[in-house]
Image (cartoon, rainbow, N blue to C red; front, side, top):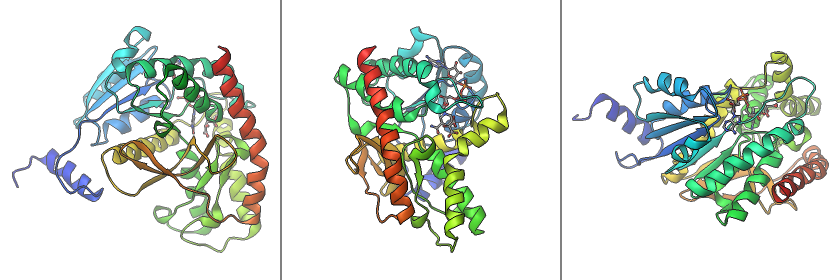
Length: 339
Ligand code: NAD
Ligand code: LMR
């Protein structure tokens, strides 16, 4: 073969992902909050993704060091660090995907909504810059409370005249990652084969794993399903308590964020049948935003998939979560329009 090692490993990778050709499109990914607990391992994982050609690492502090460090890895993407608001425009310009893990994490005893007062403003200012410098990028919102930060982003983009509902995603992949892990453990099933949709939102009871649709099937009891559901809903709190004041999930979140960004890139590149759960603008329930399975394509959301058949327990969970999720969405919309 006339390929160099790295070219042939990229094309092998892409063939596995359903490409018919060796051409790999140029793709720029920006990470905002790149020097943080999630940002650093997420930057590392994006540096390892052969679909990325340029990686922009932005934070208010610390990015020159993170960028210098990661840039020595011999993978495809060129890495650059940007620090401080005056470099935000440069970081964003030309981005295809912007991943946002900027903001404060929880400490024990806090809810995700307790982060609203600080993170709402951070998200609002970052999204204002996105609407100016890369209005066509797919935005992957990780900053909590996701149930409110996604509506804030939508309102900011609407005001700027750049809103495209196909391009805004609340990242709920960690809920799916947890549901898969816990289900496989309980059912004694090889985890690599497991799939579990998780719908609703990303906080407490708004997180609704649909274990009745989990594959492969297992014959778990109703009590076991209830326990798995609660563990998935409380997964974030489990980590917050174990870290005892040192923050929330960072490594598993970086993994989940990398999976979701990779799905977005594959969609942009025209790979077929890319489906991930995400919190998006939606008309599958009465709520304006809702997490469910989403098909990703060349323009972002190609199709928001319906909920499918729910068990009685899941239907009950769905009814219970609607008021809380509705209030969190409205809180975000109100903030964006008042400030
Ligand atoms: P962290 O404090 O370790 O890192 C946050 C980073 O954001 C810091 O480096 C900080 O400098 C940076 N930052 C603050 N203001 C900024 C601004 N205006 N512009 C750019 N960067 C800014 O926190 P973390 O553990 O990485 O968590 C980040 C956020 O992700 C939190 O809100 C947390 O709740 C959320 N989170 C979400 C999920 C999810 O499933 N969606 C999972 C875990 C954590
Ligand atoms: C998580 O689910 O781990 C994140 O939302 C962080 C948190 O505060 O729980």
